[in-house]
Length: 385
Ligand SMILES: NC(=O)c1ccc[n+]([C@@H]2O[C@H](COP(=O)([O-])OP(=O)(O)OC[C@H]3O[C@@H](n4cnc5c(N)ncnc54)[C@H](O)[C@@H]3O)[C@@H](O)[C@H]2O)c1
Image (cartoon, rainbow, N blue to C red; front, top):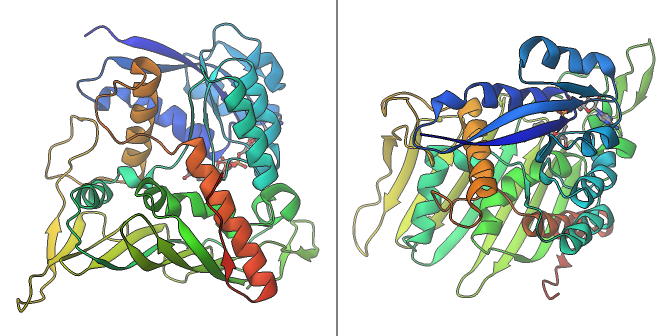
């Protein structure tokens, strides 16, 4: 099958920049697709960070330290941008203005004002395809839950709980980095880091909270700076948001949590929906398993636990009995983005990457959550406009 080659530039050659390169290198894993990404240029302000790309990604022809040079490079069709949050607004707006398509990282702007600037740039350049990275809904178990919600299997929804927990900051001796500073990570703290992952499915389902009561925690107040000093660790470590959803035909409570300090959890993304006719749960803690509980009046209430087959949005060479993991979800998300670049709205399958509008929704919720925590009150969220 002949394949459309999409020439990518990567801005930010850190953790996530490399994850993309690794997914692109594994593209032969996917079957039945007619598009392929090719990383032709990379940029990092720190020259040493691009070294890994020089050594490992043979398609890279140009290495820049100034992202504006990458944007002027005519060999680049689309950009993946994975830089600290304080740089999102400026760099994303410049990418969009250059006419190149963009997969940007969450939270898509350090705060609501920055997010708004990005959305305004998109409105000025509607021909550019812009999406936000969020890979967890591509796990087969999450796709199954997405399917069940589309089929309206739950009856009256009783409640929803969704979260993303890890414990990489439990160790108080861990040296501080940009993710623990307000200037670079933002006031949202853990919500900006992890919240888009939690909100991707609820937003896709149209579950917009009409109010939020937030409890935000700072658990480790100081960290070593790597030079013998202790410095303030400014950002929120954990957040619990109690939301009241009032969608077209359903009203229910929804508890969203993002935790950087959840002992025993490495990278646990989960969603649990209980309903009067069907309940379901998926967690990446048990990535093979999906739980469901059908109920009819007077019937038994028994959870059914099945090993979810490797049934991904895009076909792969992997047999159905094998396990799906984090790097598979990244690969699937990239397939969804490249599918849109190659085919516009005529994509092979319906689950598309998180949209800029969905990031704007997440910013409304996080901004209201900050206000709620500050005032100790429930804050209403106005979804008009
Ligand atoms: N989707 C996910 O699962 C996931 C996971 C982790 C991080 N992220 C997001 O990805 C983004 C980057 O996080 P990361 O963990 O890769 O960070 P990182 O610190 O590993 O990498 C960021 C890179 O950006 C570079 N950089 C800084 N300023 C720059 C500039 N002006 N021009 C070009 N490069 C510049 C840094 O030198 C660094 O190499 C953030 O938005 C973060 O929230 C997403």
